[in-house]
Structures are given as C-alpha cells and as structure tokens.
Image (tube, rainbow, N blue to C red; front, side, top):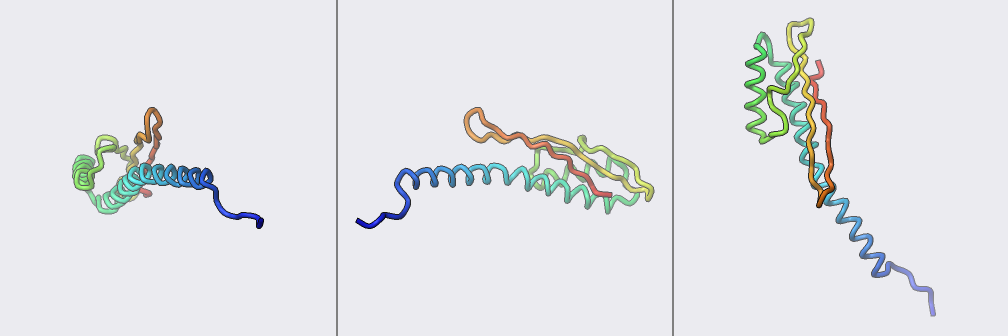
Amino acid sequence: MRRQRGLSLIGLIFVGFVLVFVALLGMKTFPPLLDYFTVVKHLRELSRGSNGDSQKDIVTSFNNRMLIDNISAVNGSDIEFEKTDGGSFRMSVAYEQKVALFGPVSLCFDFVATSGN
C-alpha cells in the first residue's frame, strides 16, 4: 500500500476549532480598537480646531461626536486638558473597556488616547 497523505478527521476538527476561536477573538476585539481610533481622531480634530474655544465648548463637542459615533466607553468629562504654548489645548483621555468572550473569560483593554499636540 502506498503511504497515505492528508489531514485526518481529528486534525480537521482541531484546525476548525482553532480557526473558529481566532475568528471569535477577532470579531470581539475589533470594535473596541475601532472605537479607540475614532476617539483619537476626534481628539486630534478638536485640538486643531479649538482656536480660542473654552474647555466647556470642547467637552460639549466631544460628547456630541461620541453620541453620533455611538461610543459609550468614554465621554467629555474624562478629558484631561493641558495648555500648550500656542494657546491651544493638548487633550488626553484614559479609559478601559472590557469585552466578554465566553463564560467567565473576558478581555480588558486599557486605552490612552491623546490629541498629539
């Protein structure tokens, strides 16, 4: 008899299990990462466009942007302001977001977003 090649049924089930686990992990971790990049984008836009705006105006604008993008993990009261030499603000926000995977297993993301100025 020739030597057989290929994947056994047990091997196929194992590979399928690994692929399903990786797909589940990817689908659960993508939305918080997308939210983080959206928060960073809005902080940078607000920092560039805050010529003479007060902190209250910036917080209100940030809250409106978070409401439009349906991001509830962070709000305007979490923003820390730092005055720069040019008269604008350097803004940063730190928050954590937990994502339940299955049963008692969850992931915790610790994000620190800054305006980059």
